[in-house]
Amino acid sequence: MAGTNSKGAELVVEAWLNPTFKENLLKDPTNTIKQFLNFNDFSTNMCVVESTDDIHNLIVCTLCSCYPRQLLGLPPGWYKSRSYRTRAPRNPRQVLKEFGTEIPEHVKIQVHDSTADLRYLVLPRRPKGTENWSREQLIPLVTRDAMIGVSKVKL
Image (tube, rainbow, N blue to C red; front, side, top):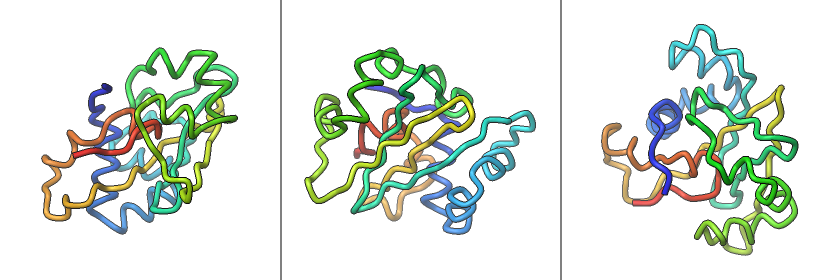
């Protein structure tokens, strides 16, 4: 199971706790990330996609393995594999099942294709029952896999 990457997790948790930050992160992700994390040299063009009760987002790079390393660390081997890159866009529900992630049939799965010019980050759903949790309690819940979309944030 993938562990936490603090930079990406910090963004997710801030969005969960601060509605204004969340709005900015979704509208202008590159600049919001740059300012929040004090990444003066952050030049990666980003798009943040929010998973909701009705939509589950999944990230893939079909051409190679474009990936926001500054936020998520090194890409996992499976992300770079030809199998994941070709199967995720065609049969995302089955690929997610292989990761142990069951998505109900009524939930739409949106697959986003990262490129050298545009990288994606999933803003996963906050787990129910964490409404009164502190930032320090929430950050360890947010895994790299949840920010790619192959898993949900779990308690």
